[in-house]
Length: 225
Image 1 (cartoon, rainbow, N blue to C red):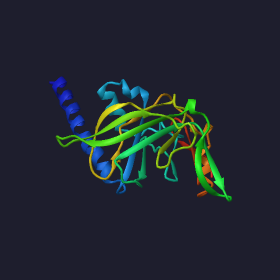
Image 2: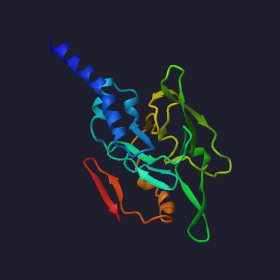
Image 3: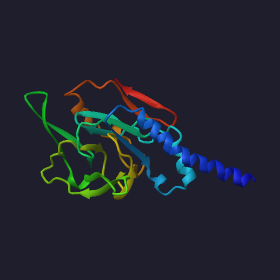
Image 4: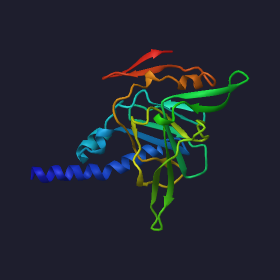
């Protein structure tokens, strides 16, 4: 009886979790891009271990800077970033590079963004498609890093070494509608993004950073205003 009760509880949790995710999406701003990053251990974890992790706050990805269309953000305590969607295509590009260099003209006007080391960078394309049966899916492929070292416009740039970020390739089921909910990407090990503050070179051209948060085991520590 105890075993049946436990299995029934687990089944209920698995059935209810998609509804929980959907409710979170409804609470997001309209026309959003929702990105989730998880520790690499979850890729090989048992279902109950994954569920236990996903249902609690866990600031594992603190310190990872992500840039998109002039916005620079870090993952929240739920390992998630939400950007306002600023393009119409059902496609995204993830660009992973440890250093971003702004090229400016006339003072603070940013002409373009560049990266320094192609060997430490990687590019991935994500295209959302609709199957004839009606469900939506992502097709994820690795692309070629630009030889001219110019970061393409409209991409989502993750400021990290390519060896630290694992982006699974293949087909992944997703939702339709205006929001783009990407498949999870994975962090190979805890990454202290504060060792690489190149995104702050870009932020100073748009607005003053209010604070920088450093990951601690039990909290975020504010180290700068």
